[in-house]
Length: 529
Image (cartoon, rainbow, N blue to C red; front, side):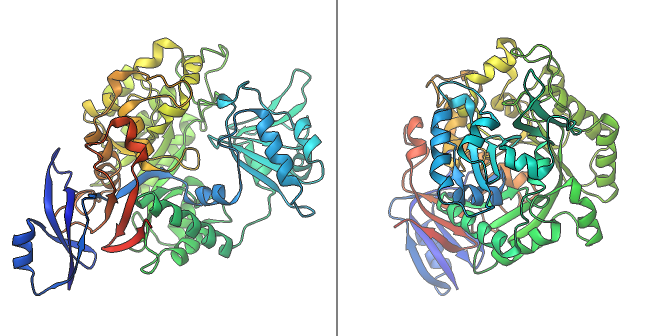
């Protein structure tokens, strides 16, 4: 028995503008598409009920190709600093939270971003101590490549002015050599490592909270990276299994941090092991940091910091060891690379250790290209996971980091597509807002949320290409393009249903479109009331 969906604009996405009248689904699959009359006649005896879309627009289900589901859930639970416009706003929010802390309880804040403040200063630990001297405090920067800690947290971690920087990390110090409470990249682990370990039930609850929000944004799935940070591989994986199943549907594809690759291997698990709703993905490796903290690795120095070219996370030899190990177990890789020097190193190791069979490697972010990396990428079976909202949130401050001369190949999404380099679209939530409609509009308009200006119009995507990032792009990245990403016979019955036609509204109004329904495997998992 099945369901007939009709009465709206139903875009297949196979070709631009291609739409059908009716879709017929049985259980989790699309059985037929076509006209209402022909499908009703063909499946008359099997149709259990009909759903009239009442003029709404049906698309293949949106999938976020790069986010952190548990981090997103924690952001919904914790003190959200992402919309603060000044250091004073942040400190006021912290003061409001301190009054409600129990003895010894951590004060945790998420998403501060000095680049959107009136005055882009970094809050010193002494300012945090004045607000909260007795409870440890950790405030994660929006990029998640840096954090602030107060003296209590540093004391618990055993960090003082004489503590050396760890490999691939920086403890920021002032001119007198005093540690300021600002930790970059691997140095963050000094603070995070002494926080109380979370329970499995906590993780399960956070995943459910996150997924409830994700489906309300029209997302039927997401590719996430969580398995290293929350008490271990198996503990976190088990929490996903408990949280997501046939009665709580969401398609989570879990990248595996290289630090827990041995856990994957020991458990005799491989690429795409799992269930219909929780499957394992590529081995996640970081090759550099982020532009905001000037730790993304560049071929030339930062324009606003001439002595700094960024921070490589691994030596060339160590990176090769990690990739070779993944290949020895027939595993693809997904490597975080923002700067062009990081990208050069990543491409070189993929060229040396090519993936076998039909699997695909992934490059996450790929924000700063150069002509060499562009030409070499064209020859590799890789997918670039891009985050279109980075354009809206990073400009214009990123110009200070990289200068005008590097702008033509910065955040160059259309250049990638024009060179037949496959891309998938994501948010990097909780770094950015998770809403895929914001990402689609950002890819189309490239308008800064800070000054309202449009940056590099030549890289603007069509709405059709932008929607593809979150549908066929995400499916292609994990080798599911024959099952997901289109409205087509024998594809999964995963749909995002919008109140308005995304291909007809004004481009600057895409973000305002309301999600009417989210459908996973033929079941309505979200309906806007």
